[in-house]
Length: 414
Ligand SMILES: [Zn+2]
Image 1 (cartoon, helix red, strand yellow):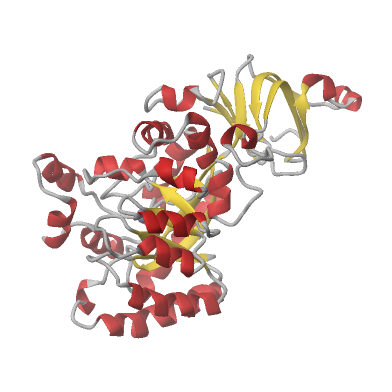
Image 2 (cartoon, protein in one colour):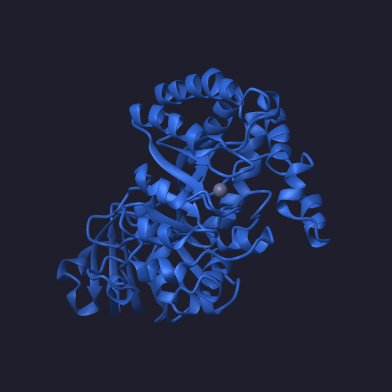
């Protein structure tokens, strides 16, 4: 049973990620020798141990000893594709022998392979297959995750995916934010009639998703092998009319599309990937409210280069978030620690920037600014670590140092 009150004592270093300031060190909002009091699932008090209200001593609370370690907010993975069927290990093998991600996609593999498997799978299988992936994310400290559809690409299969996400939201502790992504690739049956896919499938699909409240946002993959900006703009117009937020996959595999500039102009909540972003794109994203979401594990796993210019984005003033982008083709990894390490080693972020990118900036990418921050009155999503500092998280390569996860005040020992 969840206790009404929890007091976490002996916190050596607490990051609230709610600090005020323009640089990462200020935004971390660090408190040394801290204590956190959770009551009724929300944060009742956090701060230096001397500040704990006297009446806290009188409540019947579960006392937790953080062992002098580091504590911070629950992590926000703002871009995942954890719901899918099938297996693409054969593609991994092909990439290891030198085939490119695009070679494999052009030969009928890639996303189309997962579409065939996902269409054939019942909803219950999608749910059962996704649960262990979400459990792995949770063990890495993720308490909120965005999950996209986009492997159905027909009306009933996209709805089936979104219903699976809704069902998963009830079956495990991570809060899920569903995003509809019918513009992932053009389904094979519409290869010669792309316009018809948009009018006959996507338009009614958006209406049904809106009616059944199955997603809060939409996404599109704008790339030579997927959709054009013109095609996507029509769809975004319809989505905006229905009140959906917008995420976009841009500037990933090929350069020249000016995807980042376009995402900023479309008012996207987030623009993901950005490996091929131009200097103009960096300026446009930095001048906008669009969050730049980097997915370095997919740069590694898909064997595409370069890594996105995270340093230039931060220096330009962009809000930069990180994601695992868990998916069966280009990033089969729920390893947040690996992603943070790559962000430091390959995208040029500092450990503080990488940590903020998985906490408050992930919340901003989902237009949920209370996520990824600890403050009085916020839902008590937080993580205790077998570590002294946020600096240890990317330093200990690909290794989770999570000790406990508190989700809405409920304690899970990892
Ligand atoms: Zn993605």
